[in-house]
Amino acid sequence: EVQLVESGGGLVQPGGSLRLSCAASGFTFSSYAMHWVRQAPGKGLEYVSAISSNGGSTYYANSVKGRFTISRDNSKNTLYLQMGSLRAEDMAVYYCARVKVATSGAFDYWGQGTLVTVSS
Amino acid sequence: AIRMTQSPSSFSASTGDRVTITCRASQGISSYLAWYQQKPGKAPKLLIYAASTLQSGVPSRFSGSGSGTDFTLTISCLQSEDFATYYCQQYYSYPRTFGQGTKLEIK
Image 1 (cartoon, rainbow over the protein chains, first blue to last red):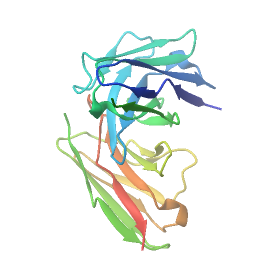
Image 2 (tube, rainbow over the protein chains, first blue to last red; image 1 turned 135 degrees about the vertical axis):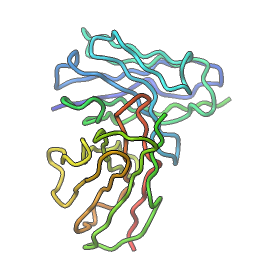
Image 3 (cartoon, chains in turn purple, green; image 1 turned 90 degrees about the horizontal axis):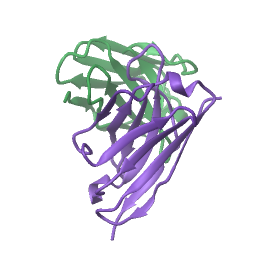
């Protein structure tokens, strides 16, 4: 069974840092591109970042470019999102998502999400 | 970035109704479009990809159509479990972008 389990969310002050993790199981993690998507409270879905299967290519939304870093450790089947210089507008539930095989960007499995709260 | 616009933003319907949600892209995206269903407190669930291909395990009352800039999601006979928020998403180019969502409520 495919599972994605996020962790690392919590309360952080504006300007602070946080690292999110997404532990994958039930599939060959190293064969899949992975993405982060977030959802602010009561709002819609916002695309955050992407990484290729081997980690060689990454993409960031303009809203997080220069502040967030996506990475992965295929030996540990884990995806990461290092977040820095956090702002109030970064407060959201962060989801990791797997790209469906034979598509370039439809997300067929999602984690349960981890909440990041940015507040002093 | 490609802008995805859904309509309506919300509406009310009854069990058994046929409903259609529209998604328009600000530029052509071929068939690189997905539809998701999200219930409160849960992660989105993939319903449709490649504009019209039903994801495995999704009931056949869901269908998608369109290409280029105009797309639709149709639910042929609403069931109680279908009341949720629906999002379209393009994966033609980066950044991947979502529509603002359509909240389907019980009348």
